[in-house]
Image 1 (spheres, rainbow, N blue to C red):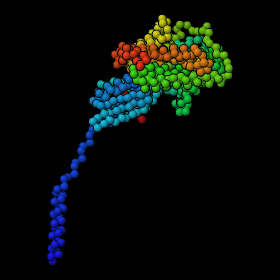
Image 2 (spheres, rainbow, N blue to C red):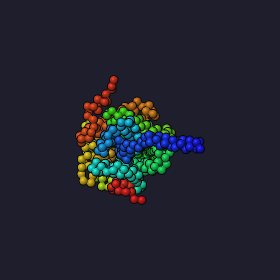
Image 3 (cartoon, helix red, strand yellow):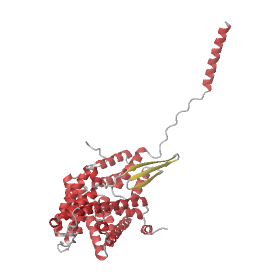
Image 4 (cartoon, rainbow, N blue to C red):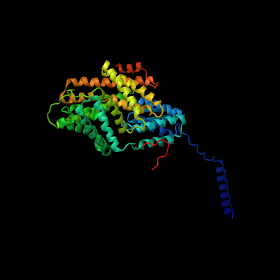
Length: 464
C-alpha cells in the first residue's frame, strides 16, 4: 500500500515540477517584421531598364548616369549609385547593413527613331506624373519589343535612298548614280538577312565590304563609268562607326575612360573589319589598277543639297522615323550641312566638323519646342550620323594594310581629328542649350597628357 502511495505522490510531484518549469520558460519571441529595402524592387527594375534604353538611344554614359540620378531622386530613392558602360548598367544600393549591386546588359545597337521618340515621350510623362515604377517598366519593355512601323520593303528602299543621298553629298558624279542604287540594294538585302541569320550578323561588316568591293570593281564601266573606287564609301557608310567613335571621344574627354576607350576600340575594330572585307573583295579580282575619279562628270552645285534631302528621306524610312517628323529632320540636316560646308570652305574639314556638331544640338532643341515636333534626340541623330561618314578613315586603313602607304597614316590622323572636332562641337552645342555638360576648359584640359510598332501612348496595354 505504501509503495502505491509513494508512486502516486512521485507522479504528482513530477506533474507540479513540469507545470512550474513551463511557467518559468519565457514565450518564444515574435518574428520581427521584414524591413523594407532602401529601394523597392520595382524601382530598381525601372532604373536598370531605363539605363539600357538610354544607351540604345545614343546617349553618352555620363548623360545616362545623370538622368538615372535625377529619376531616382524624383522617386525619393536614396543611397543609389550608378556605373554605366556602353554594354551594361550597374546599380549599387547602399544602406546601414551594407551594399548590393545589380546589373543589366545592353546591346551596342541603336534603337530605331520611333523607339527613341516613344522613350523620350515616356520620360516626359514620368517627370510630370511619377507613375508607379512597374507601369513605366512595362512601357519600356513594350518599346523594346515593338515592331518597325515601316514594312520591310520600305526599309530596304530607305537604305537605297540613303546610299544615293550619301553619294550625292560625298561624291556627286553622274556615272556613279546607278552604282549607288545597285550597291544600296545589295547592302539592304544583307542587313535584312543578318537579322534572320545570327552567323551573318557577326560577319556583316566583312561580308558587306567584300561583296561591295567585288561588285564595284567587277563591273566598273556599268556602275561607275570606269571609276569604281568612288562607289565604296557611300555604299557602306551606314556601317561606319561614326557615332561610336564620336561618343567615345566625348566620354574620354569627360573622364569616362573605361566607356570611352571601349567605344573607340569597338569603332576601330569595325573599321578594320570593313577594310579587311574591301581587301578580300579586291584580291579576289586579282591585280588591277585602281583609277581615281577625274571629276569631269560631276553634277552641279545642287547635287549635295539634293543628297541631304535623300539622306533625310532614307533615314526616315530605314529607321522608321515617327510620323510627321520628316520635315523637322530635314530642317536640322540642312542647317547642319550648311554650317559644315561653310566651315569647310573658309578653313577646312576640321573647322567644318566642329561647326556642324556645334549647330546640330541647338537646332534639334529649337525644333523640339515646336508643336508636333519629335524629341531633340530624334532630330539630332540623323544629322549626327551625316557628320561622320568616316570614308576618309576607312580608305586610310585600307592603304596602310594593302600598300603600306605612308599617306594612309596622315589620312587616319585627319579622320580622328575630324571625329574629335565633332565631339567638341557637340559638347559646346549642348552647353549652349543648357544641358549638363562639363566646361570647355575641363574638356581641353583632359585632352592634355597627365603626369517592333510603337503604341501612341506607351502606357496603353499591348493588344494581341
